[in-house]
Image (cartoon, rainbow, N blue to C red; front, side, top):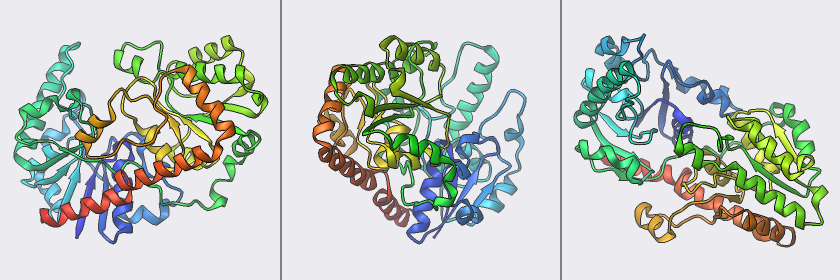
Length: 395
């Protein structure tokens, strides 16, 4: 079976392609020409040469730009020549519009954007309003006429609001978020040795690669989603109560609009000596460093975990994440058991968990292993096996 995966937002389709190939499927990844640089496959694997022959750069743009209207005039013949021979097409982004032009069907559309990409229209600028209104009309038409199934993991009302304009009922199902079957050759990660050596000095390493956005942003959603300040406060409370202060460290990435605010808060608590700042890193580097982490720090604003949470689970790292949702509701909407995360937004509880870690380290290691098993079943290799059964019925 020949499978095309179009686009690589959040590295999902590159992970998907690798799992499919591990399972014996003939899968290929196609990148938009305006793919975001940090989602290039080479930043998500230490074995790029192993996968390179299955990755292709397209001449297709993801969306229409104010200064680039080329998607409106792209020749359908070229699209048919590339994708006409595939048994299954999986896509996100603007590809349904291209598929409609070429009279091809997208078998599985996996949106990456809240409310489905190109269906939400900004109104603060007349030019953008006109442009996005056009893209919305084209995307709606293509999703209705040339897409067979739309799969999303996000079951919130905000995400599902545009399905009332579609002929599809959403399929709520996991996405293969992270590929965790790779063990890097040590010769390829030697440049990380300095950081590894620093982390190995400590008995407790709390690691958070969440972007620092918690104080200065025009977006209320972003302002309330990350809440890095709660993790900082919780860690400070822990340091004030532990007798292992010199052997405990909180690790952040220098990433996000509120890094300076986080540094001010850290200084105000007097814990500068217990915080390490790493430079912004690629996913493959972060995934390697997670082998030397005891507890992860996710997003504490009440949302279901994002990329950082998936990465913690993929590597079997127990982590703090606040999900403002009853576990029964989560199971009812997703069909999945709620994972065994450290579900809190309370600095006091964060401190208590860290104190408990000192005397019950094995408990947290077992928690990490249960998270990895949950991940493999619901967002990793076992999930992809379930997708392949759907492929069989789609052809």
